[in-house]
Length: 364
Image (cartoon, rainbow, N blue to C red; front, side):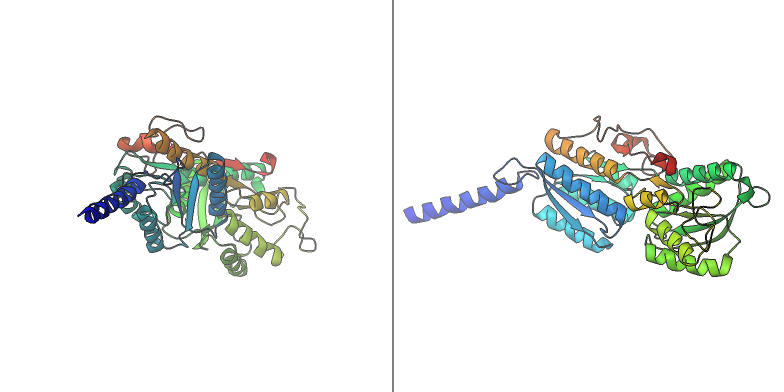
């Protein structure tokens, strides 16, 4: 009987240890260290890789254990990774989701464990943020990026009006990101609306996806130069990788100011290519391309700003219980804008918008 009593006490103690480990609330068992999960949709993209690198630095400096996983561009993989981390007791998450459609399910799974998440780059749905007040947007409004591309084009054509087509026409090539991706849809809309609002007639000569990839953009521009040479006067690419792919095609095909010396900006317009190419992201490689008079300009999508904001939202939630009403990455919650999820008054206090910024050679 005494043996059975001791055995029963041992079982009870083991169960207590298991419960205590899961009750640690995203903290490493046996210590006060915060454990944070990072679900990153695809580390092959430059912006996303820079975002992840900053997260690692932030976590190390704050003494946070960061469990960062690459979703390799697959929604099912990301959901499996989320379930694995939840099973391990992780409760606080920074997420670059593969697509918006999965974010509500992610929030429901995290909420069921009493957790929290901050989403960047790909916005969560309104319904996802409504799952609970510990779910946040820490990103940049994509229509603004497109509108800044339009602002850059406007400044260019005001400086070089002879480059315009008849009737104030911009003959535009658009290199899209992944079709249906929120950034692809909203950057495109912001760019076209921005050009029209500035009084331009917009003729889209051609547009196609290059899936955010430089190599695909280069191949696409090779085909367009063969088909449309002399018919366009501006190229918008929805990220820097694709913009630089387009520029590389122009250099290779000597679609430049001086075909005999592709490094010469003979007309002084800030680019060696015959027409300007404008990107988005302001990656280090993109900025260097601008310094070399290759890519004309870009729009800063702040990987450091977004990741810092998302991290601080989760750190505050982990240490204080909520980040509502606080400042993260120097940013406070937004007022209503015309882009989801910051369109519903019920979730505006959960939306922290990191600004885009124009980047031309004079800004570097």
